[in-house]
Image 1 (cartoon, one colour):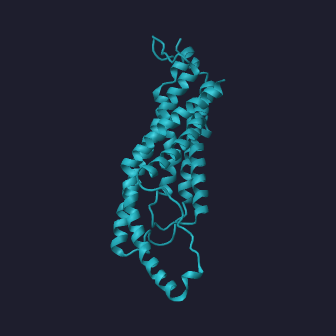
Image 2 (cartoon, rainbow, N blue to C red):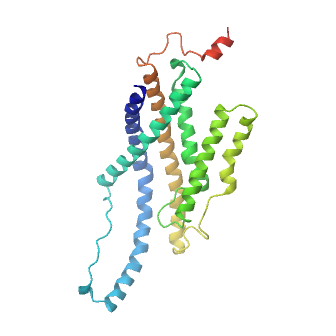
Image 3 (cartoon, rainbow, N blue to C red):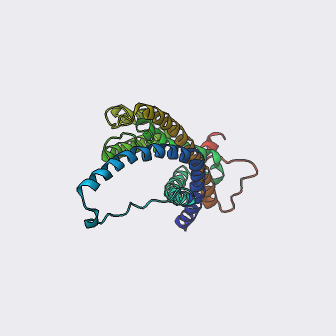
Length: 271
């Protein structure tokens, strides 16, 4: 029964958080991507014209059938709709995971339902942001089109390593006991000490100097914009998830008139 409630509220939390992320991306991130795509289209146009001229001289086009360009959503409403769908589905998955952990941690700590408030949602949101965006971005910042990148598989492995190590480090700080708790910060540093894979040379080495300078500025703006969009997403996800867990564990959702209740161990120690 409780799992069914978690799934239901995860759909609601995912829809709200996914919408928040989409709005933030539309406002902050999408214009920057469009600016980078202008350079990408200009960069692709010259080789395409040269290649077309060579093919016209060598081949008889009547003997060949050319496949259509790969499909992609059009800019505007269509692209925004697909972005919203992707964000909502991703948010539902994160909401389901974070709410299960919230309920489990509340049960393990024997915490009263009314003790679980917006502050816990804020902490969980900041933790999710740190694990899934901030820590990986320190080694592999978000990239715009035309940026030189290392091997995709190597980057994926390092990203997963950073996420797992950061999550283990934060969990150790929050739930570990001495002396293991003091080793937890090392888990936060290990991915950065190992270092993320990067392509050799400059990020836009294959572009003209003027274009490369502009792309570097756009890349810096892109990092800041994605940071803002993701913090908005994770804070909304944490806060709404905390509200949902409170509703699940206490269907009335009412706070005790005497104020927030303390966990049993704190309450007994104060008597």
